[in-house]
Image 1 (cartoon, one colour):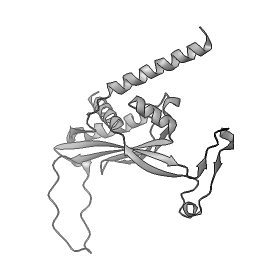
Image 2: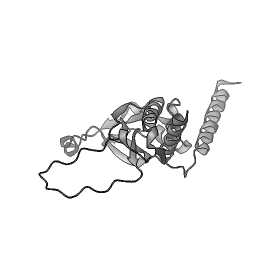
Image 3: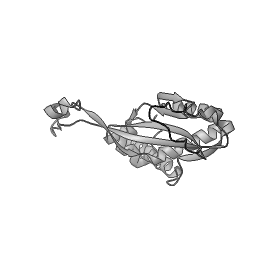
Image 4: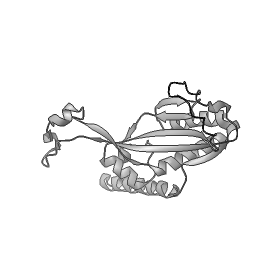
Length: 206
């Protein structure tokens, strides 16, 4: 078997695996689930463990307010097969061709919100925030994943050689701190949201 043929076979196998992974992720899966407040501590720990399993760096861990969030995690799609956040072949290709990163925010909220507090003077101190560690009833756990893209304005790619690529400086963007590059949120990732929600549920049950 020639090296060229073997390489083609490996690429075909990779594509088949990616397609299978994409098909295994239901498009209509929910990023939320309900939880008995008595399991809150277990669920909070499970959330941290799952995000670490996916190699996300935890940025905010607030058990009182019910929030776990991560720093943006870059990925190169097909070029980084050890990353598990892509849930479709299209996502693998897009991350390969774009400078994408994903950040995750998991929130825990009471399923039945408490009654609004009575109005008070603006000068009066407000009530202390509710501590979810003492909550009763049911909680709603919601996973939100935002895809962020790094934009490099003024890039001119030379078709003759990648080494001849040049950058045009934009004084206006430079003054705004957006040159040589800036990051913009482009979309949510419902596939990864659902995958993380299911993974957290399974971790709680085990």
